[in-house]
Structure formats: structure tokens, C-alpha cells
Amino acid sequence: MKRWYLYPFSLVYHFVTALRNRMYDWGIFSSTKFKTPMIGVGNLSVGGSGKSPMVMYLADYLAKNFRTGVLSRGYGRKTKGYGIVNYDSNFKMVGDEAMQLFERFKNRFVIGVCEDRVFGAKKIIEDMDLDVLLLDDSYQHRRIKPGFNILLTDYNDPYFKDFVLPAGNLRESRRGAKRADIIVVTKCPENITEEKKQFYISRIKPRYYQKVFFSTINYDEEIFCFDPKLKLPDNNMSYYDILLITGIANPKTFVEEVKRYSSNVKHLRFKDHHSFTTEDISLIKKEYEKLGEYKLILTTEKDYVRLKGFDYLREKLYYWPINVEIDRAEEFNQIIQDYVRKN
Image (cartoon, rainbow, N blue to C red; front, top):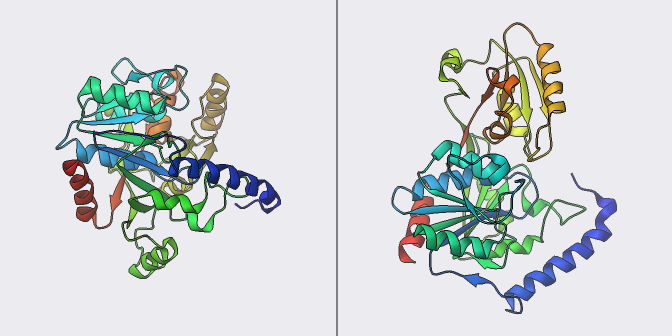
């Protein structure tokens, strides 16, 4: 949604962010570059463009052949400083995104958090003897210079149609896309045509060194609960009234997918990274009791790590994981692997 009445303020914001980027480009502000291969994943806009699923995809793929680490800022945590996510961690200590990664993959790769990206990267690489490090949401953090940048843009809200804050949702101008090695258009419809892909590529206008890929959201075949014995028969939601809880930036795709399977969905939407309170649980309980005899509470994998600690939800709360499916996946994977091996 564009807010044209704020356009004069966007001109000021654009000037400040453009000047900052030029300072880094000219070397007036310094960027730290590492010998260890480092892949940054981010976007130009505020809000959800699918960073978490992409980081999961990359970390899972790279961990098959390399000692892999992921460094997150740990947004929303109650602690500060550097830390490694382990079995004693929770979302208040490390943030929901890092906790979500650990809940799914455990010790398959190393997950660290630090608000100081340079210090955190040095520490995790040295301590864990990493072959490659993934930086989550790093595109505007120019104090650190990844050797490879992946820029994500939402199919339904691409950066080439947007404007800088506060009139639009861009954290920097569209020119920032030139720093990317790969641009991925995320959350595409499953039936996207080659003609539509070419249209997006023509609007993105990739530079000679850039590749453009398209990805879709692939929902897991299983819906999970804390107790495997409580899983849905054949994962069939059609028999249930669903209270859908989201605390993510852009839940539209998730809500639409759930409504494909259930005719009665009540959606309670909270802000991104929302820290749920006892008052929120009281509201959830009130709305849940309004539903029919066969009912359940469904949420995202990221929200699950923030909700599962409430006793009331233990036998009612389910989550539906998502994965990323990339067109020309072999080519995409080969580019990533070649970068790591060569460096």
C-alpha cells in the first residue's frame, strides 16, 4: 500500500540512505570482508519476502557438503551479545527465527546470534571452524561484506513497483538491487508461466553478473503438534473449524492456503515477531470456544516457537511448516556450491 501523502519524507529518507550506501561504495565507511565464504540473504523492503524459508533451504543444502553456520541478529530476543543456539535455548534468548531453525534442524548446522554482525561472524567462524556462513537479513548491514548476496522480492509486491519509506516499503532505493548476485522472486503462484517470468525479468533488468530465479511456497505434507499421537488423520483439516494465529509480516499466502482446506477459518493476526502475553492467550481461548465441536488452533512454524510454552495451547496447537521450491533448482544449487568451493 502506497502512502503518497508521505512522499516528501521519502525524498529525505532516500537521500540519507543513498548517501550512506555511497559512503560504503567509495570506501569512506569500511566494510569487513572475510576469507571464509559468506552468503548474505535479504531484501529491499520491510516485511516478509520469504527470508526464513530461503535460509532454511540454503543451510540444509550446504550442510550436506560443508560445515555450515547461520548468523542471525536474533530479533526480538531479551538478551544481548553473541550466543550459539542449543537445546537449552528458547526464543526469548535467541529470537524466534533462530529458534525456528534449531527446532527443525537441531545440530545439522551451527546457528548463532549477535547484533554486531562483524564480531558475531568472526566469533562463529573461528569457534566453529566453519566452511561457509549464511547471514540472515543482512542486505542493509553494510559493515560486513558477504562474498555473495541473494536478494529476495515478493511476487505480489516486487521492489520495482515500490518506493522508499515512508511512502512505500523499501528500506533503500531500487538501485540497491545491483549489489545482488542472485535475485529470487518469491511466493510465486504454482502455475506461473514463462511469459510472466520474462515480464518480471524485464522489469528487474538484471545486470550481466546477475541471475534471476523464481520460487514458490511448498507446504509440508504433515501438520505437526507437540505430541505425535495427536496428529490429524491423513492431515485432513476439512473436518475442523480452525482458529488461525499469525504473528508474521505477511500472512496472506498462508491464510489463503489454509482456507483451501477448511470452510470455517477465524484468523487472529498479530504483528511480526509478536511476543504473546497472557491477555493474548485469553483472547485466543475466547475465540476458540466459539468454534464447533471439531476444532483446532493452527499457526506458522515461526509462531509456534513463541506459543508452545503456554499450557492452555499444548494439546490444541498445530503448526504447518513451509519449504521453498526453486525453478531451475540444479542451476541455483550449482551456483551456490561453485561459489563456496572456489572461495
